[in-house]
Image (cartoon, rainbow, N blue to C red):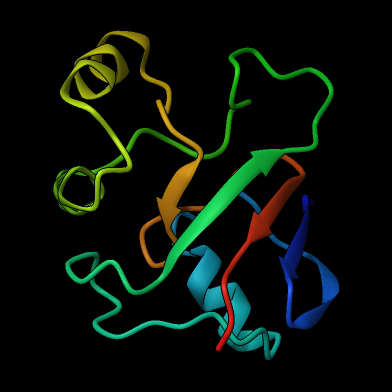
Amino acid sequence: MPNITFSSPMHKDKTIYAVAGSHTQTILKLAKENHVPIDFSCGDGECGTCLVKVSSVDKSSHNKYGHMGGPLNVREVAVLKEMGKIKQAQIEQMYVDDLPPTEWRLACQYIVRDEDILVEYPSR
């Protein structure tokens, strides 16, 4: 089971243990279940409100961002591109490498895998 540490400048860090491999456990779902105040609006990967910065704390990372979940889905790519968090060249490389090309993710779309991660989120 991976450790997920939620970190925000306005809240005390909180580490939870997550069940990996369920293909339903998103960062946002885990945050809600554990009373972590990540902002969200649509919950469907279309608005960008739940933007978070994810980094791997697993020392056996294979790329510069670590594993950090699976590749971005179409909705996440569109929102991150519109927000200026990902470039077209990174998107194209993602489809070749099958790895996420950016540390910026949408909490409602990121499916937790069996890896320890740090999730940084803004707070209001």
